Figure 1 (cartoon, helix red, strand yellow):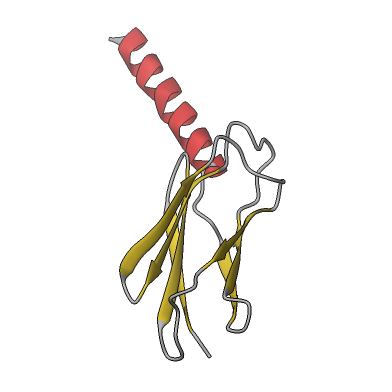
Figure 2 (cartoon, rainbow, N blue to C red):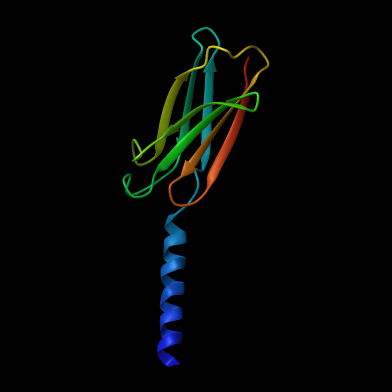
Length: 115
């Protein structure tokens, strides 16, 4: 019984440690240039190891309709995953949303209106 209790305490400590390092993106900064039709998004996600803890997927939607999905095997730098896409169909007043997903835990979605 004592070994089982020690094992359970150890596992709880390991899981608590992992969750302290795993986190969703903290912010997404979206810009869209109406003249060039270029969408740029910076998905803020601090990590110490861009190969083991990174933004694994970015999804873009135009007026709630998915238009782009991109997956990654690592993060571009220790602070963020930056993406740039051409979105030719966006018109004034349309909503563009960008969602970033951490490979370990959590997602964040932000939206902007085309101006």
